Image 1 (spheres, one colour):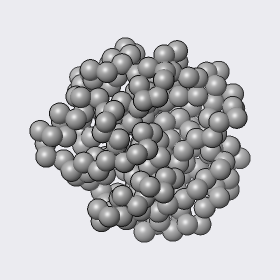
Image 2 (tube, helix red, strand yellow):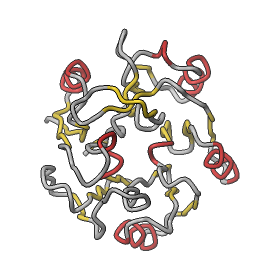
Image 3 (cartoon, rainbow, N blue to C red):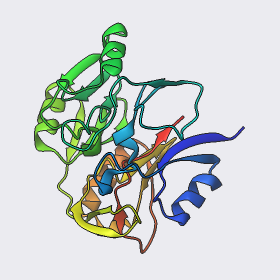
Image 4 (cartoon, one colour):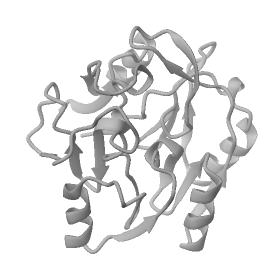
Length: 232
């Protein structure tokens, strides 16, 4: 049976082909002018997954799923109206700046007794690449400190070569995040680009090896931030 993964429509063909090769049909988020171009079809801006529950902003009409929950808040351009769904989930923890989280997600966390870790960084999921039920890589120092206090194994990295795109898929001057440039499928740690562009390549490889993850990369390609991926 085919499985599905939500992606940014700007994902390169070779990356889409890889996902299809390993058994996943792609559901693409289209360009949405409510937010600035670089994040206009980012998965982690419009979609949040906690456990097996998919929360989707009401802006998104193109993703048809039976198990989705439509949130109460539209994603809009000005911060913090663009971070309502940018929530990270690690094991029994949910992480976000909860002052701005969509109420549907907040209610779910409360009703299911999930542990909330409040952080200052609103682009929380952008900044976190989850590597197991108790570990992650993050590009935000304050997030790293908060997670460490809660017993989560954190690798903090500063990456300068993660690219954001305009609505046509061309590079812009803005820089992206490690969470948006990676995704986990089964035992594969997928980097959307070539690991040679990572400033912390060896440290990241050591971390993912610790958790039994295999690096999948795309040789010769610059690293793109698509807002990650969500398996459904």
